[in-house]
Length: 179
Image (cartoon, rainbow, N blue to C red):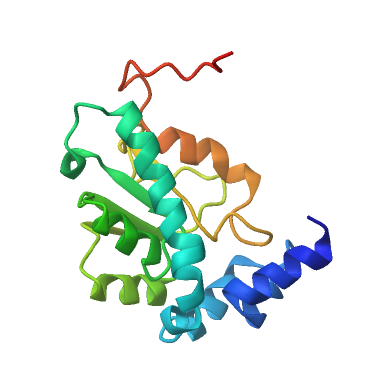
């Protein structure tokens, strides 16, 4: 996907303001952008619910059913990194997941997520590669991250921290490529 196609896709699903965010956009600017959009975010993204958020949740659900075959869904602890107003969390709850944690840089977006009563924990911080002290290593069974893994939001430096949050060795599932 070239730069022009990416920008058009961002405009379609996430709005003009979000599409203008670049890798030079600061964390403070990101906070201001999402604070200003928090009250209208869900309405603005209604088209993305079925075409974006629902398929992401269903993909995670399918993987978790394979990895945690014998673990009840209400015991699977999932962190929604870049949770925003909780649109992926809504879809996860519809699938039966109730042990959900929301992590987002915007307090205002998390305030909107709280209204949905789907998350059991809220963490307001950025994912920028620095350790998040309130999250223990291996604290979560899974991590989902939707629209935050695009230019100007969560950078590649955060992947180490995201991996640290999720437990390893919790399943006998064989992740090797099958030929």
